[in-house]
Image 1 (cartoon, rainbow, N blue to C red):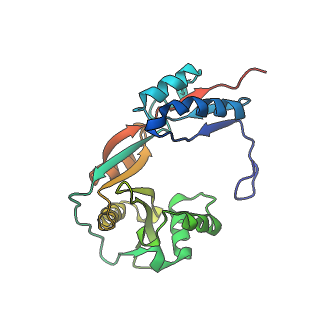
Image 2: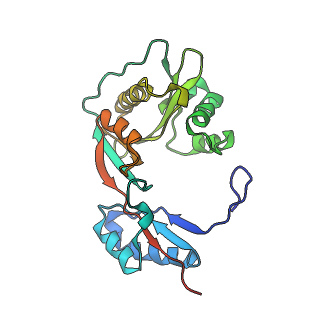
Image 3: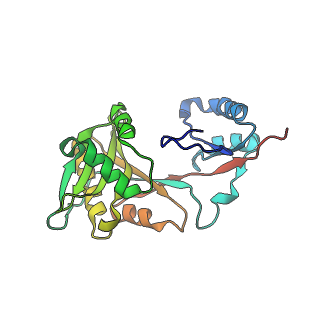
Length: 241
């Protein structure tokens, strides 16, 4: 597989992300058959929701078992958190910091904020252009925190689902030199107020759920989020030749 930075990586396993409408749950068997068909010669993992009892039974019937790598404190599974937007606390930034939107700050600043928060990363201006072209993206809901020296110290994108009146934070990141003074907390509260003004009544955000990854979970719990559901990581070994 050739990656976006030009490097080549051997693929020894694959992970499936999928969605099946609850009114058509029976289609899960077609999804599983397709997955096994296209990836039968490598290790396969999938992370259905732990709340989806029917899907878990169907994956088990096809030979998928709990992924041992997901157990313990360092598992990489995620949990989805939610809160309503009825009562959102007022946000307070440290003196000299201010909120910006990607529309105001421009693409270069938005990309640099991502690079600083997530280094090392292969994210590029071309990646960001593709993000901007997706239907739900709104530059006025892409929030940045500008430091007194002009550095974009934190950023997040909010994805508004107008039909369901909900919005999601994804991603949320802070420059390593600006962590701990409450920038991310203020940014999330500010974002929720903007989402509510845009018509959302609920907010969601995902994070690593294993006990050994408390940082993001603590941040989100601190602004009112609580777990809604979590992944149930499953694995199936490659088929014998």
